[in-house]
Amino acid sequence: MNPKGSIDLKSKPQCMIHASFVYTAEKVVQKKGRLLRESDLVPLKDGAVVYDSRRVIWVGPTSKIPKKYFKIKVLDLENRRAIMPGLVDSHTHLVFAGSRSNEFASRCAGASYAEIASSGGGIQSTVRATRDASFEELLEGAIRRVKVAHAFGVRTLECKSGYGLQHDAELKCLRVVQSLKQQFPYMTFVSTYLGAHDVPRERSKKSYFDEMIHRTLPVIRKQNLAENVDVFIDDGYYSLGEGKKVLTAGKKLKFKLKVHADELTNTEASALGVKMGALSVDHLLKISRKGIQALANSRTVATLLPGTAFSLKVDFAPARALLDSGAQVALATDFNPGSCYSLNLPFMMHLGALYMKMNAAEVFAATTLNAATALGLKNKGAVLPGYDSDFVVLPYAQFEEMIYRLAW
Image (cartoon, rainbow, N blue to C red; front, side, top):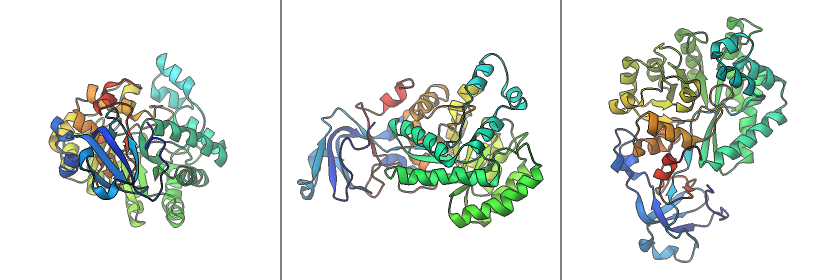
């Protein structure tokens, strides 16, 4: 899915005409991505988009392009291809080294995730490989992955640290994300510090906790290496109280907040995230009715990760209960080496539609406007004047084809 065909992005306005449909997301924006019906997609037939390298300038029927744009560079889509907002993958663990394919084979043979972790595998296996890898090796791997995501129509990627679990290694991973911003100027990257992903086995939780709060977080802020702070609140990882301390420290340093919440057990981490004004709470496989209601009455986005549930063969998050309550719901890949080795966001959309009973408008919003909101981005997720011009030209005539196709 090339974003602009073969057109060179320059400061001068350019135009695409005769799109089969332009999915502007106007109705989705009006409803703030909540309580959407199938009919809320409202695509513009035989549409045109005028844009420059930064922003969408004009959108409307091809027949009504203003005369002042008649002489600009034009690409004719011949009513064969649709235009939609660039996809936003708002939860990935993009930067790491090593492979856990052997662990996947063990899981297929009957070993549980917990059994693999207790024998030295799991997150700790990736931590060892990531610490041993050079910056250049990590960057090379990240570049390959970004290219894969881009091919699926993703134009915005959130990238977490969390596989270093020590001061220098975490900073190394975050610097890789900073370098990606230079390597891919036509994409947007949002960096999240997830030092509280697990506890390093070689030291006490208190020692590591103090390092995160008093050393690492201040350095990340001073060097501007991340926009967000995240914490994994769950049994065997960080308690609700510990998570609150991490989030409070991040908030004091003006970071935005995200939470790995209610995945393995219900800890009411979703409600905590809402109370602290988090951009999003993510996973939510075990969310309670209290947590759902808290999200429905808040600006915090519920980010669901169906690929992880699919890979681990567990129940999906209660998408319908969240959507029907009025919560703003996003979908993301949760790309990571252990429980969801996929950057195929359209496949997550397929799972959302098929197994989580989401309608096409809900899936559309969940990977565009709502996912952008989960990252605190205000000018993404729609093809409307003033929004970023990182829209995608689909290789087919309508958006529904993206949901319909299975993993390609």
